[in-house]
Length: 592
Image (cartoon, rainbow, N blue to C red; front, side, top):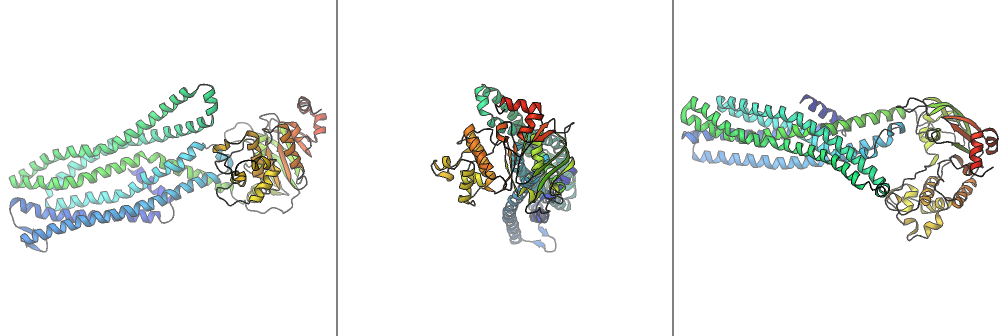
């Protein structure tokens, strides 16, 4: 129980300002509403005994009351009960609206921490996990943990006040009720907690695995179909989902179990309390004891059941809540470290992008991906980076983009380290990856990278023209307003690549980084795109990563990489004459 409460408090710290105060008030409100129950029960306890034994009804302070007084007392009991019900409905409405707001804010905080985390931190994240954690797991943390946790106060007050009232009116019966129902509740609590927690662990582990699997399989649907793997993957998904639904079924069973156990336990309580009443006050005592225990038991039992349900629900949702908090903490700590001194401005017309003695090693790697690289790249010129697969080109690009920070050494613009001017640098850089991601929206929205109509149609068309794609887009029905479909399913591989180029050019960058950006283009289109980009020589700084040497033949300088090092650099002709590996690739491409 202690760890559940500690996690509850920790979760409140992650909520928006004022959440802790609201949930404390909500818990206090539920506790106050429990007083209505206590008052109604106290009046019943004072009335039911004398009525059962035929004695005169006596109320504290007021004294003896007649038949009219009894009717008034019963009316007060009804009013208290109705008022408590109405106030409970209002509190529930109030709480559910706030819970929705907290779910939104917590989900956006988690999603924002993912989006702004350093690139090296994102490399360890699974996209399917991000989708699930920012949606259903956030819901579980708020609706299945925080809100139920706030009701524990009300349930505890309800139990306490009923026992106080019963113990004050009939001490022996109150003591027996406390011991009996307390022992029954404790037994259920300790038996259920461990199993509910295990069900929660299994549920989140297997559900995340299933989400990952389905996401990955959707991306590989064509290959799976052609290889006849559909039945196999269906079986893997079935096995994972079987464990998930079994864990959820266990959690559901454990949440309902206390109700049935306590209902059966109350029958035993009648016998026990009747015996105590008979031993102390004879038949009248037994009758009164059974009546009071029935009244108290059937009021306490729902409260005990709810208390058990709340703790079981919290135990079941403990893992998602813990995972949410850990993800936020890890991402925000990494983000804070990465964003230190990142807002220094850059010169309006810089001269050189300098890589000096740069080494980079991924956190889990044993060797360096980039090893002591030094390279000067003049602005307004074209620098190409070539080399075999695994030579370090992609890591080098991520370092130049400012997504990764060197383990040793420094990358700077006219002496200003990129790590100190990340915001200003990213505002000037356009990037075209080898695998361009498109979303299910219009061509214009994909080029402008927006999800509404806040784009400039003229700029969209200009960018498409530079990417040699405007003519084919205008031939489509609706032109730039045509939708590309899920993941760009309605466009060809070459068109996807050119949309990526247009997207980068739309932002009017001063530096354009092309990471195998023309690999999916046919020779004629590649030549046209290359010529279009070459026309910007002197205005636009190009950094080109390519396997096809024809793409980089006219670069001002070419850096040839091998095993994370720049082993040679110079013009195309220089490398052909000085680097045998490069000369061999050029010969195979028919360039020499």
